[in-house]
Amino acid sequence: MATATYDKIATTTLGSAASSITFSSIAASWTDLRLVLVDLDSNTSTQFIQFNGDTVANYSLTLLAGNGTAASSTALTSQTSFALGSWFGASTTIPNFSTVDIFSYTGSTYKTSLVSNSYDANGSGGTYRSVALWRSTAAITSILISRSTGTFNAGTTATLYGIRAA
Amino acid sequence: MPIPGIVASGISGSKIATGAFYSIATAAAAGGETSFTFSSIPSTYKSLQIRINAVSSAVFLSFGLQFNGDTTTANYFTYHALEGNNSTVTAAGVASDRSFGYIRVGALSGIASTTYPGAAIIDLIDYSSGSKYKTMRSFFGADNNGANVYSNVELGSGLWRVSSAVSSLTIFATGGTFSAGSSFALYGIN
Image 1 (tube, rainbow over the protein chains, first blue to last red):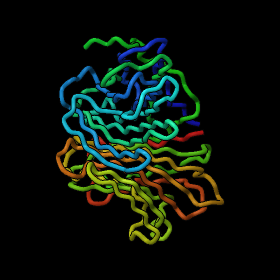
Image 2: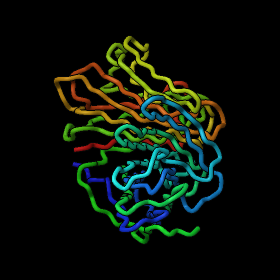
Image 3: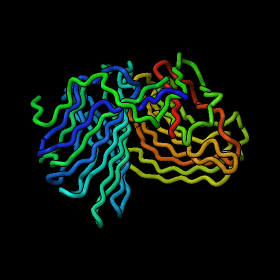
Image 4: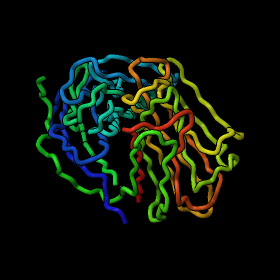
């Protein structure tokens, strides 16, 4: 049987509120990265991703969303980060769940990510699937997860996995 | 940039194998290919996952999956999709012959570029069963920062109406070829 190739690179569980989470010094040992975020929000806000500390408008996103009553699709171009989701509400008990699959993160093309974000609060919530583009050919060595406002509450977990090809 | 949160730094190369996700094979495009085939897939796993990062110099490149070299169109005809293309949401279902012998996964952004990749994750469940048809699901997306209207995200499902175990799998392109920088990886999941 082939060798297992889904590796946990790093994980953190917040012991107290924090405004951001960073994975840095990411080695070029894998083919793809997968970020898993289970966050508890201090207020209604959006989570964002930036790579390598790049704050220039090099990010874009195409989004498919459902909120219980309607489906919609939006494109955001030339952004300074890309959003995961979570426009719905704050809670210390109801987690918001996101995965970000980052393809060929050391490759020579621009970097495409597939994003899944889900949140349900027993009567409100939503689910998002989106594709995000970072217009840079640099290898990704760090990931910053931040919020538009507020903080990630204690108990929020973030885990970064590496997936290696044969 | 101040980073007041938790920093998981200096952990490069730290790996804890989860033990259930295995790399079976990988292919990279040199440029000009219309298909890639993974053959001799062992039946040792419960499910397969295909991960694709594709670029093309074609204006519009559609791609999909074909199993065991089966080109019988009637065996692939069930397909459903939910798609957002930046302004509208559409749902499509096909319950009759689509006139081509593969299950569609997605289409690159309608822009001739070798720098804007489209990406896909495809899961094929219970692929080694010899007694039931094979169901797959796909999550595809391609974004080009507003260069045209074809940025899209697509969720799909498909059915291969054959009971044989899947032992080979072809990623099949129409409308153009894959360019260098495209990569295709097959994983087995237990």
